[in-house]
Length: 59
Image (tube, rainbow, N blue to C red; front, side):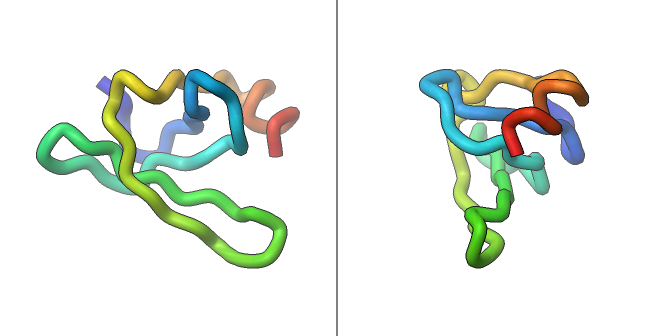
């Protein structure tokens, strides 16, 4: 289970995101795309947890 506040990334790659919630098997994430804060919900199996060092490198 991915906990709120953890850094994650899509398994296919992409920006580092922060988990802000979960409901009905979906994980809500937020990230900054360089212009604004974005948010989207993903299935847990689409995401992988990042270590603190990986989150810094990816952002």
